[in-house]
Image (cartoon, rainbow, N blue to C red):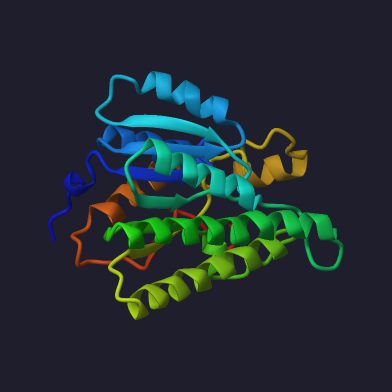
Length: 259
């Protein structure tokens, strides 16, 4: 199998949650590979700063401010892309959040925040991307940023609702693949499921308790760039090759070490 990003050079990729962590690493990697990237996030100024640093690269990074839990923001972002860029070929559904929101003590508003972003935001962005790809007869690629917690319920306090949201992403990946097949569309779909990654959701969170700091200090971590490399790998496969699921863990990770 020959791996190559050549067919994507000059094409448009949308990356949600591109202001930091995995999303920023993916956006940067795609610009390095020659793609035009639209980064979507609430903190769009961070993407604009990255765009300045990448101004001498083969591709180009654009920023747009949007809340991925709000349908009107998603629609505006895709309209901006339609009005200002070439048709979207790649969607990276990276935006996501966790919460200490278990079922016996969690608050409804916390549950809603997790599902609104991790599930509904992902679904709305996917719908809009497929519309564009279908209208323009594009054999594109949609990647859902999932988690190992989307395949196994983690046996420690806190991530109950997060796990449920990521299990939904696992189901939505296969649902989407089947729907695209039924419609005769050759859009590829991949779920990327990392284990523990250094990020603002984990060991870089500004409000970590001493207890959580102690827990994280014992764990092995992946870098955001490792996940970006995995995304590039999935995108580099030939048009007839699809990777439905790609799981990535740091060496030495124990079964319940990740969120």
